[in-house]
Amino acid sequence: MSSTNPTPGPGVAPGTRERHGFRRGRGGDDSAVLVCGLGRFGSGTADALARLGHEVFAIDKDPVLVQEWAPRLTRAVEADTTNLDALEQLGCGDFPVAIVGIGTSIESSVLTASNLVDLGIPQIWAKAITPKHGKILERIGVHKAVYPEADAGRRVAHLVTGKLMDYMEVDGEYAVAKMRPPTEAHGFTLGQSQLRRKYGVTVVGVKSPGKEFTYAGQDTMISRHDIILVAGHSELLERFAARP
Image (cartoon, rainbow, N blue to C red; front, side, top):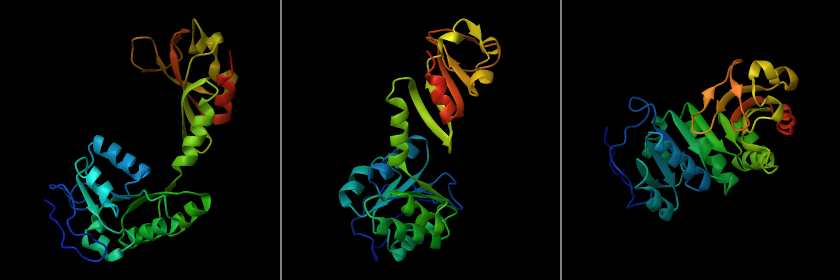
């Protein structure tokens, strides 16, 4: 279904910049995503989704941001997401997934999220500035509150020591880290070195120089030039990474 320029109504700016060929989520493209707010988090998420092949419909009240992102996304519209009538006019209730990327105003974030809940969107993710903000979002019906600044801060904290090459929390205290193998593992298979038994972490992948990452098993040989992916409790990963 091709999109058309909506007739300007409450909260919808005239002269909206958009791209055509957009098919809405329900009854259309199940991979379509609505993004409200084109700040750093919203635009970064929208860009990543578009690169992954999703159709992305973005809304922001700033015409400069709309103009900047219109060529890169399926559709970009200048509108006020705190206005329920504007969202209804744009057909936002048809989307299976929506992301609230508003971080400059808690009030705007909450009002936007509340509108999306009222529209019955099945899955809503929203940026939260503080834990209290996140709790409010979840109480009004947001399915997942995201804390990008806090998450980035924890990731950097794990990387600044230089022991870890990359770090990602998966669920609570569980994480996956990329690092060099400890000296005691050099020249041995994972079964021989018994890293899991000794340290409570699991080596899930190994990358040798010039090769791609491969799944690791008990017979996987580790050399000092390898890079390993290790999964486990974050505290245990830190202890393991501290090994010489």
